[in-house]
Image (cartoon, rainbow, N blue to C red; front, side, top):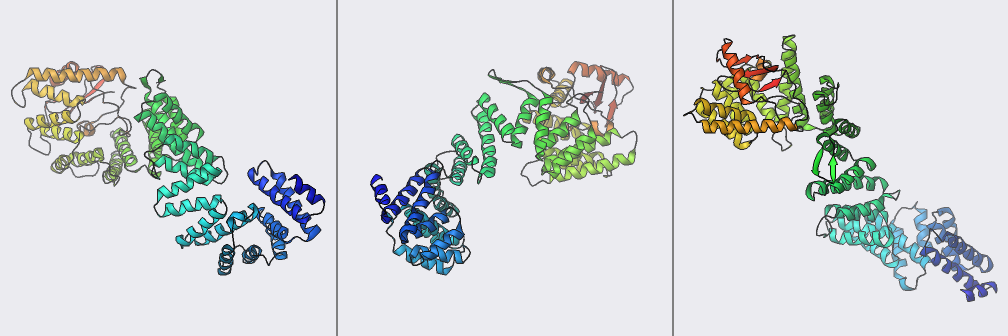
Length: 598
């Protein structure tokens, strides 16, 4: 360089030209830090033209202005050197408003045949690489073979970042993810190319490109890098949120690394605004967590409500369902509001909550109808008809999930003649038989006990109650029913051992639930709802599986005897209001009833 400087000072035009070329190559080593070298390079080329009308320097000045996107200035200098093949090709590009024409492809092809890439200077390699990439883009959608040819030329003549990424996209579109990943990896690791970093993050997140497994940690690393670039920030940030949530879910549910999982949930929720992560945190605070001494989460309905509310601002259906549940159940003091609950369930439905939202709306409208029984008969019928329509929608869902409760409720509407449905016990019973859930089997058992829609048959009632217990071993009502049937010998010989066994199991479950119950189960029960095995806690029963509240066997039997002494007769359906502990007790035939606090 010293020799060139001396030669330049002595007026050697070629030396000045080479000083400009070397300054540009030094600039390329670190463009962000050596931007002054770009200015120096341009000055050298300008001096070579001014002092000696140096032809190659004219071409270089055009190339420099082109790289700076100063196309008007570039065109002037390419016109001064139009006899050069590269200048000629660039002029064709400019004269057609940067559109790839047949003339440009021909000129670039001719230019390519004259090239000797190893001896090209860095500035020419950069310009020709960009020109080949430009031609390749024109073929990208319509002719992937030609596009790949030109992209490959671009990469061969100059390590062109965009062309490298474009080759990855081409192979990805053809389903060749392994080769695509190789190109993306080159762009990401060699040049920190943000779009390639983004793609590499996605591939690691989904185990694409020949990876042995999903690597969420690597995915997060690449996506964080891509998110720092303005061109990929939004997509990378969104994908990073999804991957962080996936990582949190894997740590919590699969690896059981609860502390790390919680931190990832919080990062996804609070830093990346992932609504699913906000909902997950809401669930954790809704229930509390004590499964790991290193990660204790105290139950806090207030904190859970805050997270659900934040997720709902993103129009998240599950969050809306949970908010509806909070208003329906009154988890926070003074907030029980059925109208507000319905508003949130309807939002959940509008936000693609699907059959679960339909089920919640149906159950809530059914409950609202019960509250009006003594006041407005027509309003009750209207609400029940609306509820049936929502149950019908949930039952016919194509989501792949079996919403058995909706089907049970439809059957009960026909069984009991609720709403404006004709009372058809036989039809209702037949519908229940076709539903393969513990809830439906419990209703079938009640039908056999009461002779409702079918001939009374305690042996079949026993069979179905036992089927319920096999399917749901913690079903207290079924356990109580079995205890009574065996104790009273209604379905065969009296068997006190089995009766005591079932009764003890029910008592144990009751005690456990009393200890763990989050809050008391509040409801008003009336004759047209209480005779069914299907009961209400929350319209969002699918998300909040909180057990029914039942009294123990001894208390129940005492109430049962009081009922009989109060001139009660075992008709198909009787409601007996006892005075024991302020409970409302429902009795069917000689069986047990579901009991709720008033």
